[in-house]
Image (cartoon, rainbow, N blue to C red):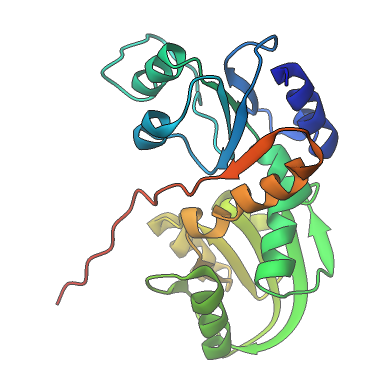
Length: 245
């Protein structure tokens, strides 16, 4: 199947024009005229994955491999080291990032994984909000069970939560748009925490990897209508947690 036909299908289910201006969703490596034998769906590209794939494959990831521009192709450094492997093995790569957040991923995690019923959406579907009736303990237990978090890192914990908002991945920059009692997102930094405290906003770090790890299964389900094999491959969390006493 031609890569162009696959790209056009992806554009119908999650238009690339929806991506944020700073994003790089779309074709990162390859040619639209290339014949694709198999599709692999995962969160990220890494060296072990590339080593395992057959030539003529297409990787569709959530995160772009080329992000923020490349000034030189230093093949000893990321991402050029991976691009070199892809070119040598004739492997193509398409990213579906912020466009897929808006059309699929955020809603899937919020409704299908966490079980919340959407009440309000903000920022073209980026931010989802629901009315809830939860203690902080029951919310922590839900997140631990559904997202398999190693730990619960929270800011300004409240005993009772009546509304909750979420952005998968890294969404702390959207804090000022949140009207809920509690905001779930990943990659919380120290100054994000200080700002949340000053604004009386409860925040929980649900992990960037953990909150977006469902990308492959969502996309593979959409690709079932195409006459080509789509395989879910599970990316590795780059972080490893050790207990210290």
